[in-house]
Image (tube, rainbow, N blue to C red; front, side, top):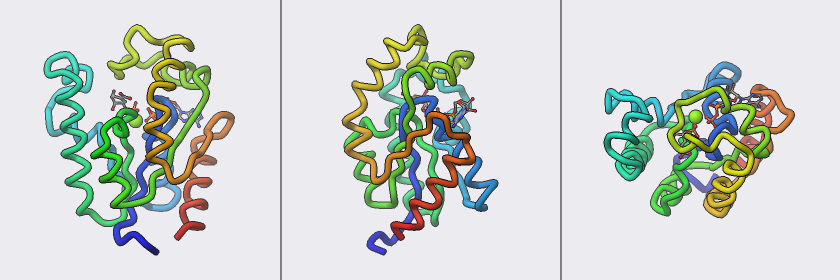
Length: 174
Ligand SMILES: Nc1ncnc2c1ncn2[C@@H]1O[C@H](COP(=O)(O)OP(=O)(O)O)[C@@H](O)[C@H]1O
Ligand SMILES: O=C(O)C1=C[C@@H](OP(=O)(O)O)[C@@H](O)[C@H](O)C1
Ligand SMILES: [Mg+2]
């Protein structure tokens, strides 16, 4: 085991299932989970839509980095990241230093189907169509690929199946 601190970081585009899969990993395997978005909401006392509208995306990204630094000191947790966590090189480095990084992926069609009725994501405002999702996903693809240790395609799999696949592949590498 090369890394002392073995968090599991879930990364990937919005709607690929990071939040749901982390909850399933808690239910199935008793793993402690941290939802970075929830920590930010609690710290700020406002929604992500409000934070973006009132303080800007860059302010939100600063909070994400701050959270990653705080979480580095905790013990063996599953960290459900927001979809933009990988955008900063510093964040990718912090995750690499502290655990194994799992990239959850899905096709734009699947993503659209999963996010279409949810208005809690400011970066999807006015972009709930395959073309725009594909474009933003492509823009971020290199960052996800650069960060990831393991990629899991989630199309056609249940949340529990994805959780099981992650659990098994992480244990194989440990
Ligand atoms: N593998 C899956 N199969 C079916 N629905 C899924 C799957 N993964 C996530 N979902 C659904 O998609 C929506 C977005 O999932 P969420 O966990 O919030 O994704 P993320 O945190 O990556 O944005 C939720 O309604 C969730 O129930
Ligand atoms: O990809 C993004 O830019 C974002 C993804 C969201 O998290 P999910 O990926 O869990 O939806 C949340 O952090 C915020 O709305 C920004
Ligand atoms: Mg989420």
